[in-house]
Amino acid sequence: MKANQRLLVALAVFATVFLLATHAREKLGAEAPTSGAIHLPHEGSFPSLGGAVAWLNSPPLTPAALRGKVVLVDIWTYSCINSIRQLPYIRAWASKYRDQGLVVIGVHAPEFAFERDPDNVRQAVKDLRFGPPMITAIDSDHAIWNAFHNEYWPALYFIDAKGAIRHHVFGEGEYDTSERIIQQLLIEAGATQVSHELVTVDARGVEAAPDWDDVRSPETYVGSERRENFASTGASLFSERNIYAKPSLLSLNHWALVGDWTVGKHSAVLNKAQGRIVYHFHARDLHLVMGPATPGSSIRFRVSIDGKPPGSAHGIDVNEQGEGTVTAPRMYQLIRQPLPIFDHEFAIEFLDPGAEAFVFTFG
Figure 1: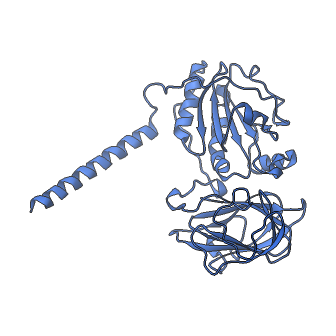
Figure 2: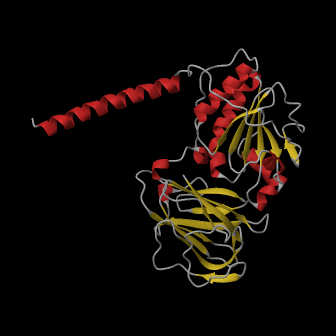
Figure 3: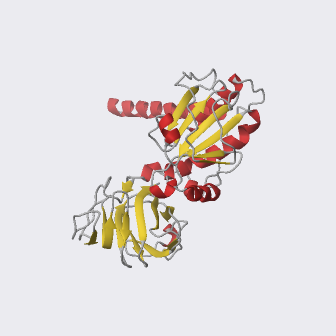
């Protein structure tokens, strides 16, 4: 065997041993409590909750009334896929640690105008099972959002029994660390029956974890304010009614309106039936936040992949033929592909006028 071959073998053996050791460390870290406390500096004081326009599952709360409790504040909004995918963990922690002194407050801070409506929030809280023991503060005016100087959906703030913010997490993920911090703060507060085990969640449907390895398409806004990769031909003016057309070729992550649309800052509204949105994407899941422009109306739609019904790749809000109905403003899961994942051209055709589209998200 030549020297370079021996070197390659030695490197292969080293790599195998390293990977096995790393796997063992990761497995140990996942199954056993960490040794020593996590360093949790004071990040400020628990700000006022006084700006909520309504409270669900609780009378209005104040930081003073919550002294002695460990509080997890979850700033979220109901059409955000990142917020939705975090919910199984929030539910599990609220249930597991409620008797040890954890209070979970979901601060619903809207991104879009329809999320400011308390009735829409109440329905979403019910649909997404964000009920007791979790509490909801409806922050339609972003008063609590601003009090926390927050900039993200979702955002978790971990507050100790003395009213100090000790940690934060922006975005989804970091679930094991988050639960360890909850355990540590409860023990600091004097709880004696705190389990060191970590919760196991069975997230399904839209709450299932994303397939990050195959998410190659970005969040894409349909309104003009944050529009990117818009490829329609035939019109260039916004906030006015226009006829749009699809170009002959759509590059990856480019999209187009087709038909008679009015594009505003935050959304696009279809004026005549048979209008479409076409998107060249790469991801397991494709979602679209949309609703009827006129509350209470229903709008039929049909989705396709590469010009064909989605079949087994349909999302939970459509059938195998790609048929569905828009009945309320929310996030709709339109595509969930089986492996392997490839680039595809997605299209949604609205069979009735009045659809309002806001943003595509992927998973």
